[in-house]
Length: 400
Image (tube, rainbow, N blue to C red; front, side):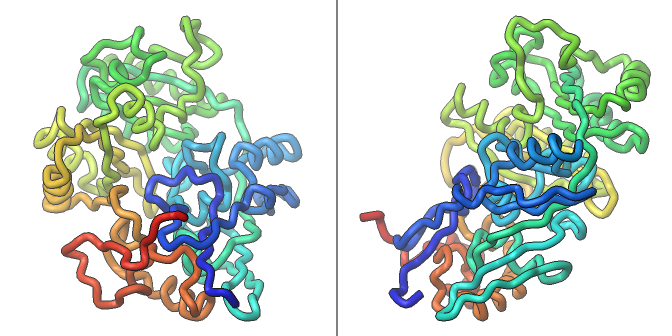
């Protein structure tokens, strides 16, 4: 603070929006040494921000048979602090909703960037000040997160020849009140055949694939549900199928691991994040697929919002030009599909397309010099900015 040095807080650097990319030089505050699981209690864990998600789960399972309600697909490499500061949901959102939903974060301890730094404790309404703020207005030093019972989840792949059948199956399964799932992903053909190397021998170019994690006590219900739908063919079940090569955790095919796997095969692939809102979510998916497939392939993740099942899209896009990508964004928005654009590095352009006054007002209070992760909050840099054009941070400079 005294020397006006910008500080970008970094968990593991696995974000997809450039959350921890320093735009104005300065220093990176790496949280890797603040990685302690402080205490585990019934239904909650107190943990430092640099702890890897997998290590939080391991500690909670070992001590109490519990696990995090939700985590990003980068569970093995991402930190809990980075997930809360830069993420929005993930594996588990089909049951628990998003991080921003009330109850999915219990408490955050935050240090301010002032001449005399303060240590603040946030709960309830105050959490929105710093959650998903990319570390622009405070440094998270402790988290209290809710837990759920841990299970030996059964990973499954279910194959379909018809996309609509796969779409209906996925939504109907997520709506089964008595069947507990952790993830439900749908991959339009030929994603599984083209990009999932260990799955490819068991599918064709026409196979639409559903990836699931089902609690073991729900397997009888799941098998009965699936038997009622002749179009569904279970091709893999963890612990039961003998594949030549173990496919690994099913969740590592979902969320942004889908994009990662596609990029390894075809570097020209990019993606967009889409919100297909209830109650017209399935209709919107069909509309966009009809308009854009195979240039844009549907990859859907079931999420729950206000108690309703709907879809988040992480669509795979065959990139040609920036102009065409912008046109694809426009076509989605015209159809009523909200885009969270991973090709933008600011809070506003990457998501809400508007100013979050709670985060802006807290930044004015907690970071009066604007030293925390500069360039990521347009409302701080240029309050009169119009979102019809791309923002370019004027303070951007190359590392020396």
